[in-house]
Amino acid sequence: MTDMQNTEGAVPKRIGKNIIWRGIALSALASILSGCCLPGLGRGAEISGSPAIYYRGRLEQTLAAPLARVHEASIEALKDITLPIAEDRADKLTAHLTSRYPDGEPVRIDLEALGDTRTRATVRVGLTGDKDRASYVLSRIKKYLTR
Image 1 (cartoon, rainbow, N blue to C red):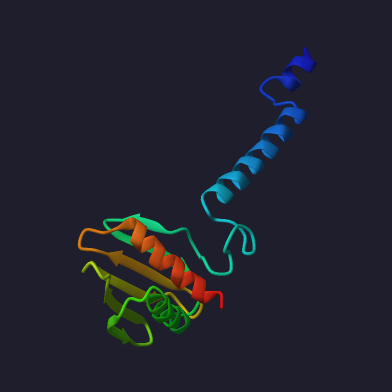
Image 2 (tube, rainbow, N blue to C red; image 1 turned 90 degrees about the horizontal axis):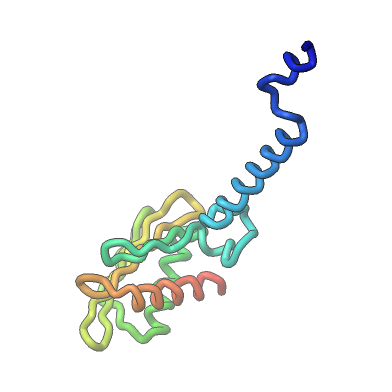
C-alpha cells in the first residue's frame, strides 16, 4: 500500500526527461523557423537583422548595418538599376530617397536608424505597391552592403 501512495500522481523520471527534451527541441525549432536564430546562423546573418515583411504595399526589413552604410548602399543600388535619384535627404536618424522606373512607377526608399548598428529599410514601388520590384530593389541594397 505504501508503494501505491508513493507513485500516485507522480510522473516516472524517464517520461519527465523525454518531455523536457522534446520541449527544448520544439522551442529551438520554432526559433529557427521564425527567423530568430543565433547570430551567424542562417543565410545572410551578417546583413539581415530580420526577415523582410511585405505589408500594405511596402517591403520592410531591418538590416544589421548603420544608417550611413545602408544609405550609401541604397544610392549604389539605384544607380545599378539605372534609376535616377530624384530626391536624397539624410540626417543622423533617417534617410529618404525617391526615383522612378522608366514606366513612371515611383520608387521610395525610407531608412530609419535603430541604434548604431541596425537600420530599418522600407521600399515601396508604385502607388499601391509592387512586391516584385520592391524585393528587387531591396536585394540590390543588400548586395551593396556586402561590398
